[in-house]
Length: 409
Ligand code: BGC
Image (cartoon, rainbow, N blue to C red):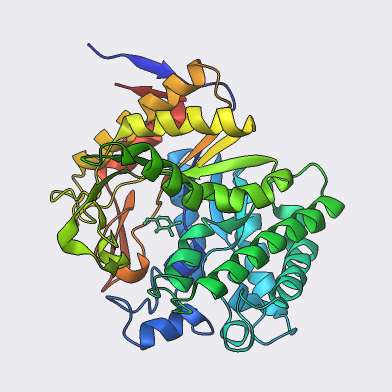
């Protein structure tokens, strides 16, 4: 027997992509250089060539009946040299945003998605105090040039991920393993967020400004009395550390949920290997059937939503949720993933959590950072040789959800 779960009127169904992962050719950035140094499985190259194909890619959003689209501005494009902004690139981003507005799609813009201009990373980096001033100048320029076309801002995307991976684990640029630099960068990112909040609000007081947190659900096994301590510590690190610094400058919280992290302790593995999720003996259980070894756990999204409501009592947007699969159009796994997660989103809403929207990650298969092009997150499959796009079965299923504002379980 099928059961239809209706969502509140005006619920913002959407998808998401990030500029670096889909545009292609972002050669003026620290990530590009990182790739050239052989630090990633593949090089991003032309990616999906969204930079040139955005209009036809937006046709997919229209077909889906998406109400919102989350995308990002590439700082290294619009400010290719220190203090010199590219008018041409602002014209480009205006066209991208205008195309979305013409389709009646709300624009949810992220200002910083893990990538820095090369000049910035060479001369400064977020561990330098001056970064706050420099980042604020970029934010001001975006607000001046594009602000009339932006419906919602996320200043930083999952700030703790690049801070941890780039300043403690050393696997993202700038490649440090340095707690002092980490601490400085953390504080400068927090100050940059607060400054950006002020800049945006000064010109557009009613436009919501927030942040996105990677908010997976963590549990521990076999750890006896340590369970509570470990859980607390891991939450403190992943969320509270930055959230405590910026929470007064948030109009909403965006959560990005993917999986269950089941923490275990293994005496034989006392080393730091964050790529394989080993942190001085603590490891995260792996799911052999998933391309990125992630454990799918839809209930966790409900638990996260309840927790965020208790903590913040602000509107919540789920701005990423998705599953990495292998190539193939008949992606039953993704359909099941979406349906089950939405069932728990619905449960949270019916218990009073103010969830305003859901963006499936991702519209297109794209460049998955260290993992290159292997994991496929898209509703649309990309043939990376020809750049041909093909709609997966999940695309049609998600279209039904967006059109009918309901999910069938
Ligand atoms: C990031 C995306 C990434 C996705 C899947 C999120 O943490 O914001 O850039 O592609 O997870 O790993």
